[in-house]
Length: 212
Length: 167
Image (cartoon, rainbow over the protein chains, first blue to last red):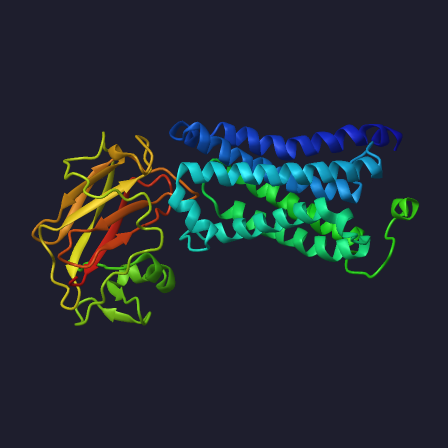
């Protein structure tokens, strides 16, 4: 029991590192990279890293990452949300440079590729959350109002990102890609169950009470 | 030999089993009709088919070093008669270059049976799908842009079929 407790923190952090690191490393070993120029490669990896950040977000807000206080977890959630928006901008900009007509098709929902609309919808949901998060204080959004806005958008981001990623044939290795997508879904579902996001409450958890 | 004519959309709708039966799936109605039936519907351009198109690619023996085969047929709408000597332009993201680059483009002519076949470098996935582009753009018939998708990036050939209507 005590041995598990002492090993728990490094195990969880290590598992998180592997969950994101292995898909990135296997994509970095993809033979497809030989036929791509640097801008396209950067765009692709920005997308993979964005998916990894979508995994981290619910873990932070659910308090599942050990040795990270609720306050610091929340701060990290804000910064990683910003990083996610930047990663998506790099992803879209890089793909635009690689093939402008294909990117225009995707953004206008007229692309022949079935995964594009999922990615574009998730992108707008990410931008909407980031934008509202920046203005949250200025708009005077109460925690409950914020949750009503953020949670549906978070569901759109998670579902859209996972479908987008799974349907793409690219540099990601299939098994590690499916595993990462499954973890993203599992983390999002777990945090929603644990925080009972569908319930109408003022203060769902201890630290919220403490902060209010 | 029966020629199987299909578009990707019809193929998806009708299922792979259609292939073996030698039937033609028509675009407008989605109903299966015998290939010899009158009123063969013209092929519609596929969405994204014209992306990275370059006008007037030269007729070539082979695009780049080759290793991959793009083939297909060109027929006339209505009676389905094969169209000989039709210029088909082909381009794709390959191991030798990106889609928009001139060396990734080439054109070929159909033979007396309306068939074309052009060797090109191996197509690789770009924008999440391994796909090629083909255009009929000579003006005698209505311009058509196709964007067939490979079932797997490992395949070394791809087919696309044109049914053209007068411009």
